[in-house]
Length: 232
Image (cartoon, rainbow, N blue to C red; front, side):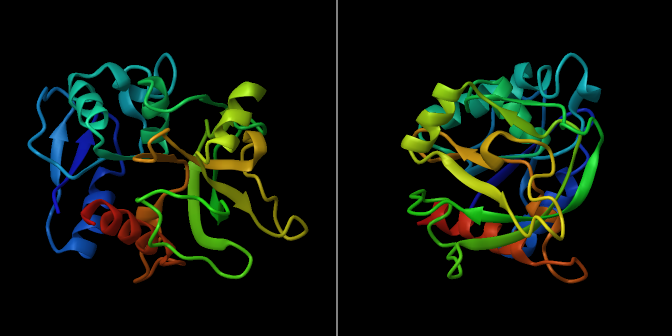
């Protein structure tokens, strides 16, 4: 299992993701500097969270035009698996690998807290097939940490995502105890998939829910599912 993690100026979750993947696979992923134009054969490419290029212009806009993203686009065009987390999700949107955009949270404040996610019913993706659910469809408790996590797309695009089964996760929880949606995201969307279900972008940070001191180990479950799906 060969995993590559793209690193940009301002990335701050690349090492966390590296440690998480190594804990699951026993093999350290390759860290790819954003100026590299080629990526050695990889089964999975991960774009981690952080503040690439200081979030100038728009979050992810400069990173999406880095040389390494050309290799990511080639990888995805061949059906390769890609995971973008938080800023990585923003970069995937800016690069055109996923539809829609991420704008400022409705409260106009940085939000950092645990969230609960529900896997969409009847979702079919090799990246998530191994995940499993409980009787309510609730699968994951994973924290978010972002200022621009409010997913937006026109209504017709949202309808198309629904119809094509491209919504991966929605924010889920007890609205009396805590707000379900931490950022105002349209239709409570927390993560989406590409049309071929091989590219996944999500705001919550699975590398921060690995057990061993973390509140949850559901991030390990998610990353293990993705790795198993890519390896199958």
